[in-house]
Length: 294
Image (cartoon, rainbow, N blue to C red):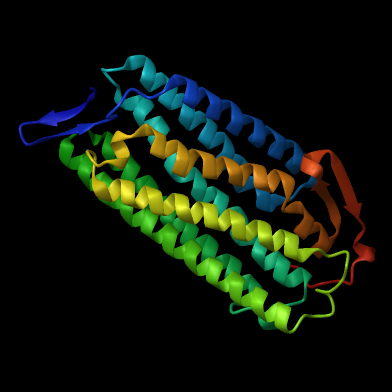
């Protein structure tokens, strides 16, 4: 199979011929959900969704890279491999950025600043900054690999592992912060939080599920890279689809259904998406109690 071979070792781009049917399915599914997110974004102007949209298209293009690689089997070229590897590694960090920005808006919409472990303005800055750092480290590791020597690939792997560790730590702490806020709010709810029209628990529940899926996927990737190029996970293609592709597609679809524009509209007025974009609701700013803007 295609890869880099020296007298001291070998780095295989793939330890199996990638499945064209499986990759084609996820090219289509990620494109469809990203296209729906694009429609929802253009109707609602919920800027927190933009990283999610970009990540969805990135996933779709990444699986195109796997199709291109499959057609080259067994003599895989570096270009399609890097396309597939880089985009599917980095996209979930973009999903996480959208989730991080949404929690701060939930806290402000419920007027629960006093119940948050971290001030909402600092919360968004802190976790998005960690996300950017993890994204940059993973990107740097992936960019080292094309240098073309076996040593470069092994160094790149270690750098990617460090970036994944940053993402795992960041999203783990984020879940903890969200849980503490949730516990405190349920124990001492604000007047705004018990409003029947707010429905912040639905939005927070979506953040929990999305965060958990990204966390599990990132743990999988961390273990996968830690095992090395000849590890068990990298030699079994089905593990990628079960522990990465399906969870990340679920995150995309989840936020089609529970769209982050709802939180933004509750905070500052405007349009939000319901029923996966089939209904666009407009909340006038004067209808709100005037929560502080993020």
